[in-house]
Amino acid sequence: MENSDAKLKEKIISLKTRKNAIILAHNYQLGEIQDIADFVGDSLELSQKAAKTDADVIVFCGVHFMAETASILSPDKIVLLPDIHAGCPMADMITAEGLRKRKSELPGVIVVCYINSSAEVKAESDVCCTSANAVKVIESLDAREILFVPDQYLGHYISTKINKKMVLWPGFCITHMRIQPQNITALRQEYPQAKVVVHPECRPEVIALADEVLSTGGLCRYAGRSEVKEMIVGTEIGIIHRLRKENPGKKFIPASEQAICPRMKLITLESVLWSLQEMTPGVKVPEEIRLKAKVAVDKMLEIGRG
Ligand code: 13P
Ligand code: SF4
Image (cartoon, rainbow, N blue to C red; front, side):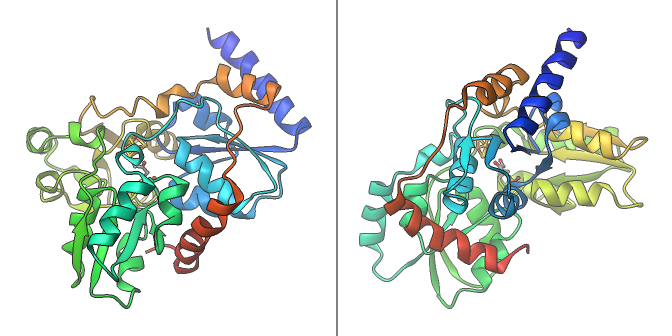
């Protein structure tokens, strides 16, 4: 098995060079995908990379909205998503039509969309954000009322940090819902020295028990601090691979072994190789939508990290 993985990796690297491709991978990807990627990061870092790369082809090892964001920012590049079924269930909890209807009920409202949303939804929004900069983005807005879509839990977390009225869309992440407060309480008893770090997509009862609430990129940086020796990790378990690789000797304990994003795991070495060989499946946002969505994404990129 290891041998065939090694062969697959070799083929991917040589094809990637031949096609002037870059492989971008999210922190939740399988370990073997992270290991062949040119860059591994959170949603904000990946969109920043996609905006700047001079590669001709971007192989996006993540979920559909991430590949769409790359296409919004780099329309002249070929963007490949090795498994077209790798969608984010939370992003599918809102449609552009549903958002238009909600906006009509809240005249003049400013819409902030989490990057975990389709290009059509971004096109209907004023500004985009990720978990790394959500508070900073919303603080920067000269508006008293915000409609935040689609993650109610990230929206709720932001509302505890700022002084603005937030109307929340009732979406959520199925994976982060699997992390329960009792998981944290039990692990804290077992590992009393450990820091508890959770993603803001977690439910408020979990967030209330955490030492830090961070994006996946923030979580990786925090793990590198010298005072952190043990960490209870409240997010998707794919990130544990990167944490252990970058911090040998430290202990990382998943808050829940059930916190697996099945769509992220659809991307495999086989599908990456096939995708590069066949140059499919491509993700391309229609120009009319792209131009509108880009306004919201660009505003976010100007603001940067929180
Ligand atoms: P990050 O932007 O923190 O990487 O999160 C992306 C995501 O999908 C979390 O579930
Ligand atoms: Fe979407 Fe949740 Fe998977 Fe992130 S972990 S891609 S929010 S379903």
